[in-house]
Amino acid sequence: EYYQKRAYGPARELFQAYHASSGPGIAKDQSVLYELICGVKLGNDKEAQVLEKMLRQQNATALENEAYFALGNYYFQEKKYKRASRMYDKVSKARLSQAEFQEASFKIGYSYFADKEYDKAKRFLGQARSQPGNYHMPANYYYGYICYLEKNWSCALSSFAKLEGKGPKNIQLYTSQIHLVQKEYQLAIETALPLLEDEKLREDALLVMGKSHYQLQAYDQARKYFEAYSL
Image: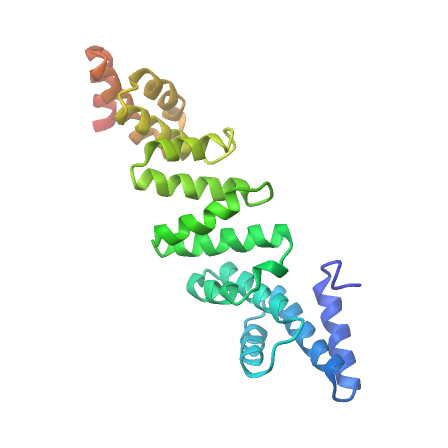
């Protein structure tokens, strides 16, 4: 009951007490696995290592999927992305709930993104962004950002649009830069203008504003933004 309610501390203690007082058998083996899974979910590195070793050494159990999924989440949280991907790869996706499948897809995709393996990242992020849930928006953001890096402007814009203005502000910067490249100068100006109030994005926004006004032959305005950019 504690485990189902995600109260992993009390659950861990109960599993530990059970296997300490019980004889050999499947139930005891499962209680050991549950105890280790609880430890992993609580961020215990030692128990993550023990659980991983145990999974390599013993035959498959009904808890194997849950154990690998927990290890994947733990290593992802620790930013050990390659190791996280290896754990997720061992998970039977058919046995995951829809929410868990989306979570695993996003985290595998992000892990590849962090290693700049963009083709692989897009494949998994594409799975995560195609369904509603907690990872729909971040999956669309990173998918769109990869498209932006690849200069696939239509893909980037359509992905960013799905965020409905709820993503990080740099999406506006990327969007304004795309409009500039596509010679949609007025749209570039309208998108970049609010970013002039943002200290981190102001410099790049000034450049978009200057170039866009220059292309519209509004040279006085262009000079103003270029001068502010060069300060």
